[in-house]
Length: 169
Image 1 (cartoon, rainbow, N blue to C red):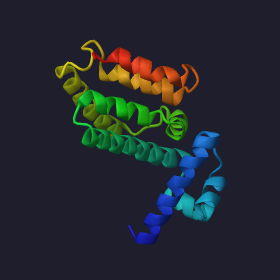
Image 2: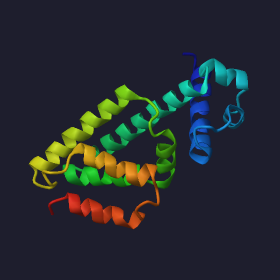
Image 3: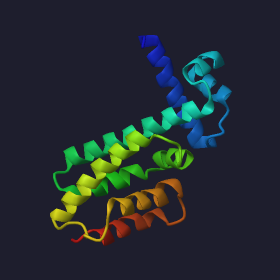
């Protein structure tokens, strides 16, 4: 891909991310193009319809989560501390808005890779004795879902308490 085409694609995805976080998945394509500084034709050449744009945005989002998990693991040698850091990062306000908007949007391969990586970390934290053995990766994903995709259902101040309950320390 040419450098200018890559820049346009990146600007479109950034604008789409903001628009979707603000207005949901029905954000007008014209608004996204305007915020990206490109014409509507350029947007539709890169992303022929809304579903293609949302799939690309979902994949980018899951890769960002994977990067956040990698950073947490690199910064924290203790698997449980890394999991906690990842969860807290992932439910931040801006990330929560995009997660809520993209819930159910497909990015299956990227999601599976994230699941495998998180599952390895969960097993390590359990082997270290830092995380309860009856808690699994699916439980962490449900926790992320509640706090990121459904903000306000449980007050955010309960997140550290819930994480404390998942740990063994």
